[in-house]
Image (tube, rainbow, N blue to C red):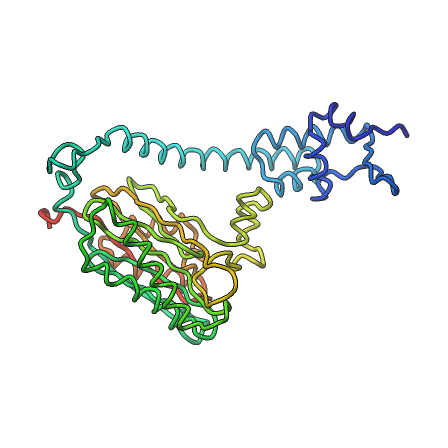
Length: 370
């Protein structure tokens, strides 16, 4: 049988040699023969159809795991899977389009403030001086775990959820949150709040290290937001999450620091595969005990807030077992943050309660209208 060299096959299939080598390693498109002495790859002409299908699916944006599944199917079943993938893509694109519209609107109306003239355009005090948070925090052991290692806190300015792990997980999560509570009573101008928050996170890291000692097998996640009076400052490390309910849409505003999330980002897993992956709880970042490596940096940024926003901070005891559609509907239906937090914890326990579950729900309201 006449074979094509990797160069000739690359040209015919419009896949680069680098891509062909990657697909070989991933067992997505194996060469017909590999020279045992040189390691050079050769392909059969009849493999071109599969290679072109792979190229088309990559152009479509399908993750590698999905391409592997499609290539293993008969044509009618493959067509159905591609149709289903595109329906999911259109749905996700619609959500991103709404978020992009919000960002464009926000940035288009942002006017730099003259620091020497309070009340000039762009001064947050003009529109947000009378805004405040209405909040509720709730933590529950769940139905399986013997003890609760989560910590949830909501104050005038500080909202926080931490999910501890290891033999001293509960003290670790508590220490991390305690290190942020002083921000409830500090003046927090938006221009310097990130510096204050970074200092607070360093304090949280040290507090966790004191609890955990030299081992990195004890630690905690931390997801917190601090209200400045005009914006929310976000700090996040681990797989606890923060969501925003705005205009009926639910937006996740944190990114999980997990092995599975990194595989999703690289296209090695589909969202459906991720939910059942055996390493879905394996963290890449967390606040842990001492070690030779430097402490990983959390995500820290400012988030613009609007009247009517409802925020949710939660541990993975909620997000891992309750679908986001249910979270959205529950947040939208509840009349108060307390009602929402209770309903969400109840939903997690109704789903088996396999882990501790913690929720902080906060509404941004106009104080004058209350």
